[in-house]
Image 1: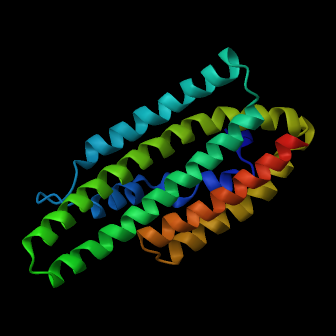
Image 2: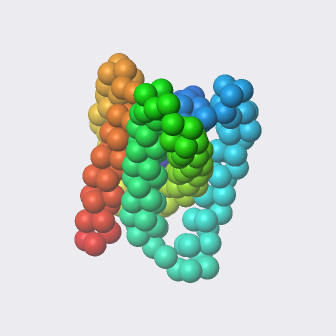
Length: 204
């Protein structure tokens, strides 16, 4: 669906969504399991289920609750930004926890560090699931908004122009070799900007 690409997709189609390994790797880095991490097959399957659930959420919000798609986008982008912020912070904590545990010889401190690592893992996974729900809700909402905002005769040209900066952002993110906290922090910043811009659009 080439007609389903706009400037907001610069934020939603970042590497953490285009490449599921980014999110599953982040989930693994937050894990304290001795078997090497969570079962990535199950993790990926739950991502897909939550993405499909997001489509149903959009249908309920727009048809049964009468919420405008432009306003739904504001909520979706805001929640997505907060999800990425939580993932960034839990990944940062997971990175620092092993170092702190190695420096401590106190069994109580080690037990507390293990409990904190498990909590970070659950928070990161829950945030990833919430982000995938937002992904599923985003596409039908954005398609509806674009159909009412962009003239049909000019859609191809407009989408082609916006596809260039979108791909540039994705390329820079991939080539910069950022670690998980930095990558998701960058996604939080971009999604925050997208939410602010969409809020101004829906007000107008």
